[in-house]
Amino acid sequence: MISSMDLKTARWVTWSKKNLLRFCLVAVTLFVFIAPNRPAHYSYLLLVGAFWNIEPDRLPVSWQRFLGIGIPLVLFPILMWQYFPPVWNDIVYWQLGTRVHLLDLDALFKSIPGNNGWIFRVLKTPWLTSYFQWIYANGFTLPVLIPIFRSFWAKDSLKMIRYSLSAHVLQFLLIFPFYLTIHVNEVWYVLGQPDGMARHLSAAEAAVVVVNCFPSMHTSIAFAMLLLAWREKDKLFRWVWTLFCLSIIYSTLYLEIHWVTDVIAGILLALSTITLGDWLILKVGQRWKKNA
Image (cartoon, rainbow, N blue to C red):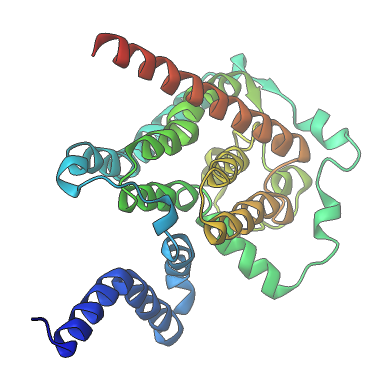
């Protein structure tokens, strides 16, 4: 016969297992607020918001069955960001060497009324500037990596594939023709303003960094991840990612990085990659079932 003490112990163990992740997230939150150099750890707060209520999106799949595909899928974006940036820099330098093939639209974009995004800088404070600088600096990787890590913890390989496809995988392929044919510099550079990111670039560095603005890939990545986040069941994650991704898009205009036309094109690119990603997953799934 099971005693009441044994029942209480069993219930406590079950409750502890169920809430272990939240205990860890609370500890992470406390660490962020007491650790030195707090801004360097703000990304952990995004993890807390993303993982806090993950259970509604978790699939009833065993870890043994999932890890065979889950580990490669979670390693792929990590390895990509480890080895791809040098390759991209080589591409940019090669592109600059073929300038005769580019269409320079700086003068046209500058002549469009309101295209420099001045309306997004009507309210400008040191606090907002620091906030948007942090957002922009992390707005190319975190919007993708955290949802992939979240989907890994939810044991959902299909979502991991969808997030990767709709972000850098398809976007790099679709955006490259634009970067080869259209030359647009960052707003602050064209207008002769200080760099909104305060990067203190030399003339040689600026020549590489400020190119390839159309479309805005910060915008396309952020908007694609925002739309995919709204397919999740967890309301907290949806709203946290909405705020984060919209802040990324706003930061490109607030910091005078992108033109309004860049942002509009980035939104259209995001819609295209999500549509293409859904189509590819559907077609591969149909073929997989047909051959099974």
